[in-house]
Length: 175
Image 1 (tube, one colour):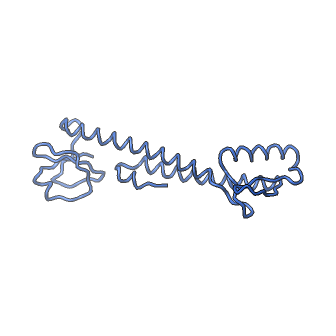
Image 2 (tube, rainbow, N blue to C red; image 1 turned 180 degrees about the horizontal axis):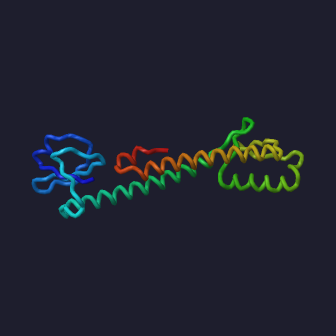
Image 3 (cartoon, rainbow, N blue to C red; image 1 turned 120 degrees about the vertical axis):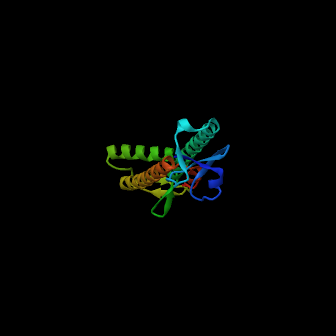
């Protein structure tokens, strides 16, 4: 909500608001909370052109910062989804390519009734881990759990970004 107050009364006030512009003998400000008199609510049509331009610039800045934060959160989610998972004391890579490979292996070896004797999976440190079909499924489940948790975390943070009305609120949201 946009409010206007005389410059004399503004000097006596305190509260949670964003200054938009001073025009003549009046101060125009924005606040999510209702402010008490001598503040007066102002509609968009009552705003002086200087204030309307300042409001548009502020809204455009918030939109740009919001979009950048949403993109940043998507990037953080992608990085988090690619983090290795631990299985039997070994780090197993979980990049998109690794996820595809493990699903392919599960699909093939399920159709064949199991992995061949001596089947091994290459770990993050390039060591080898003896695995069977149940191990492959367990690794895929760990990766799936990680991905699901990251998507849920990202969605929660994105919702906070979308609901934020101030640049400072958006900037405080971190992965």
